[in-house]
Structures are given as C-alpha cells and as structure tokens.
Image 1: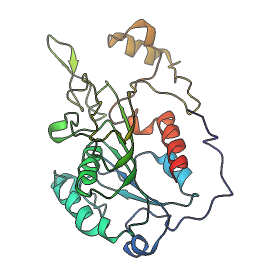
Image 2 (image 1 turned 90 degrees about the horizontal axis):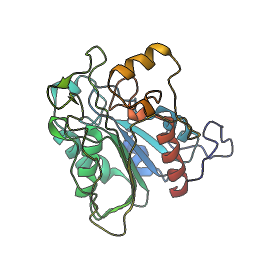
Image 3 (image 1 turned 90 degrees about the vertical axis):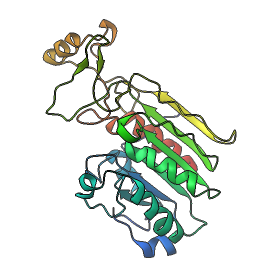
Length: 272
C-alpha cells in the first residue's frame, strides 16, 4: 500500500460540515459530506481511539463523530452502569441512521466492544451501504473475540487484532497455570481474529498486528535496557524481544498504533 505524507497538513482540503465530537442531528440531516463514526470500547474514554487519524481527517471534507460503545451521547458514567451495547445499537438504528441523508457515505471505526457493536449495526441497516468498516481487536460479551461475520452491505472491511491481551495498567499480567496463556482482554487473544464475510463483493484487509510500527512502516524498537529485560523475562522469543508489543488497550493499545492509522487514512482517502 502506498504510504502518504501522514504528518503533513493538507491545506487544499475543504472545510468539513462538522469538526466536533458530539452528535449534531441537524448536520446529520442537512450535511452532504461522508460521515465517519469513531466508536470506542469499554473505559469511557471517548473521544479517544485513533486520535492521530482523527486529527488528520478533520481538515478533510468529512463529518466526524465520537461515540461510546454503549451510549451515543458520550455520557461517561453509562460505560459503568450500562454494560450492554443494546441501547447504543437501538439508538443508532432508530435515531441516528434514519436522520442521515441516504446519499451520504457511511464509514465506521470501532475498537473492542465498539467493533462488535458496529458489526451488528451494519447487519441491521441492510441494504444501506457502508463504504468502510474497521474493527481493531473487536470483542463481544465476556471479552472474547468477536465472531460475527461481515454483512454484505459493507464495501470495504478492515480488521486488525493482536495476540497480546491487556489488563488495566495497575494490574500486572497474569498467566493461567500450566498453559502460560495471559489473562486479560481479549481473554482468548491466542485465537485468530479473522472474520468471514457474507458477500464476495466485500473487499477485506484482515491480519494480526501484535507489534508496533511507526507510520513509515519501520518497527518500534525498545532501546531502554529495563524494558528489554522486562520483555525477555516475559518469555518472548529472542528474535522479537526488542520490538514493542501492541496490546488490546492501555499504554500500547492497538488503536494508538500509527501504522494502522496510516493504513486506514490511505483507504479512507481513496473512498471519499
């Protein structure tokens, strides 16, 4: 894939209809630009996922919205009191999607529970087209990898996952005795995150990415001796003990990886 000048400002771009994060129903109805929804996972940090990508898209002729995986209104406390995406999905189906001009292009990017939620939304709004749908280490109930198939109304499906699960930053990594599998999300991170698709017309770009890369495609290496020793003690192979791992969340979360954001930026630019 061709690498763009990801860090450069594109002054020639048109001003988008919406530069904010929260839903603007008037803009949804009257706007003409493509709409990109960023849907975060558990944690109540929205807006948080793919901030480099978000910032690079803002000068473009697009409208961008941040959503919580279980609340379209970004009410942080709902992440902890409503541990279900049912309300979010229903609100998207009954309030948000019907308000959008049917001629506007739809693009979705979701992490963790957010990835699983947007797959369900895509399925239920058929036959309405979704130009681009991306999930980053998508998980379903109980923190297991999502197993939903990609519905046929998705034109381009982008999927990245990591084999390194993650726990909250203050909790050390734990392993299951006897099998040396790490606890955390996704709890079955050792399994592939590849999904099947319902239609041959859907283009797919799916692969594991368990190690970090700069936006130019070069590996992120650990030069700090303490970090090197820590990862060597974790049992990683000598061939990759200097390559920064990507985890489901926390400090080295998959949605922060610059190369993944670079790839999505290039694809989105081609679509819009």
